[in-house]
Length: 440
Image 1 (cartoon, rainbow, N blue to C red):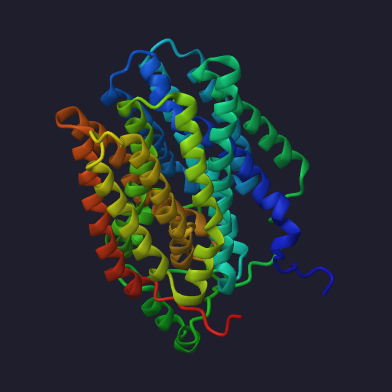
Image 2: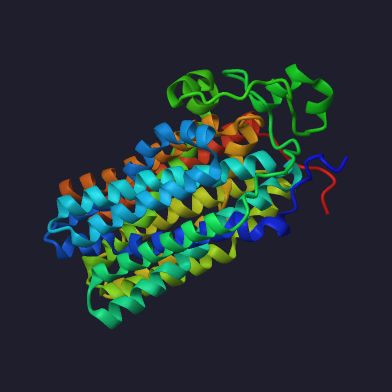
């Protein structure tokens, strides 16, 4: 009995599980709101600045291709260490970039590293967190990311104020990555000696829902809505595209809704800084406004997890997407108003509220669907699907802005958000009908 693996205690691993993630996201939050402003300082037009801001999402999409294989082969801890090292090199490129093109390359590499880092932590939480606590644990992980995006803009605003250089914010990301690597090397690996207490279904039958796949494996277990295990299932490092073929049914249906969630979140991330540039808000003020909005987003993470664990995933997903859609539509009508700065602040806070209600949603849905023994390949495919929307949305915003205006781009994205709410309402009950029972 003394050699048996011990179950997960979230409190006991909070430092090792969440601190490196917090550090990495603080650095990311420090630079994301300022990417369009740095690009503009280097001579980029508004549309080109939008394309450069989109490079981080495009990099995440490309990074999703090998990330599941990488994490399955070298482990979560090593994956995060190497992702942080790559990020340091990419941010140095951003620091010395002489033109928008070089800046775009650096931002693209940051996106690739971010995909590997995020998947590594997601895979760990999927494997070791019990089902009844899953949404709260993953929304807490989402809250850690949001905490970083809340703190980061304030650090960058202070540094810009002291140095007078917008690019100085990149030093925050370098420092955070160095600290994250140090923590990962010093602190114990949380995956050692831990049991994997039935975190999720072992496999999904292509084209069938989780409930149907569970029923085929064990009707009794499925009826109790309990996580399934398959100790005999082989652990393989399957590549992205074979995984997509295996799970094409759920990825084509619920995955499309996830892609639209990613699209709305990415659109918000890019739209607000572009809007600030367009209406003449200064760089420090932009960082401050987006930082305050990040605070609203952050404080709602546990509320989101409680909603998903107690009432079901759909009660977080649909209100979040409706709010993101309506916020984009409302923003579209405010650009030329005399009080456009006030409207910008108000809509930024509303979008943060809508996004906060959906904290941890995509990670929770991915964990619900992923095999327990080797979740990383499926989670890589799931994140690729969601990140496809994240990468496409900023490019769509930039393209529509170049052809028409930023207001029309905002309104168009709002319509897509409302359509996404319809898809989630349709497919979450089919593929992830999870509603935990007997929870306090």
